[in-house]
Length: 268
Image (cartoon, rainbow, N blue to C red; front, side, top):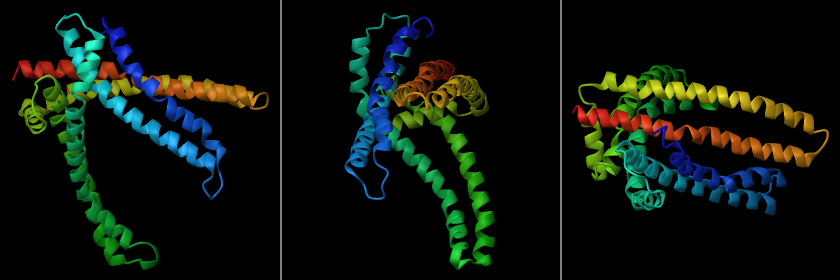
């Protein structure tokens, strides 16, 4: 994947392009400010909303395209980016459906913590009830622990459903089942190989973000007394850089997960 990183970068940078409306919305945000929504507030809200939708759509397409491209690169095939773009859109709706299904699974798991949290809310405030608090506290912590356990467990078991969907040509339900079957009997080995690269990438992003954000914040502080226009330019630049830092590592994450998926599939 490193040899063909330029091709992956050409795909991932579409997220940066799609982020332009959201950045414009953030730049225009100071226009309003009153308790009642003004024309400027509505403009900012509309642009930001459209920008968020555009980023979500493009991000889903970018993911499908990256997975398909990484698979092509891994088989030493010549990559035709235009063809990959078309295949990415062709698989957009199935992947969107799978994403919604996975979100529903996560939401169902998260419901476990709701009863304890609800009792804590009911037992606090003006209608404080020591009994409800006494019941809700242990129920909340037990629910939170169970929820965390299940989320970690299924995050690994379901991690390869998109690859089964896009590369295995399976349906949404079958891709979820196939992903769980790949991990069955080797969860811990898969978990370590799945989590460690992400931890490393996260630490790199954290350090890189800090090294870039710190001088930019200092520059904005210095420029405030000289020129609002220069402050705005630096602010926009910092927004673009923050998005760029986040997306630049995405191809590496997808490539890492692909090779893990391929290894699991070959040794099944």
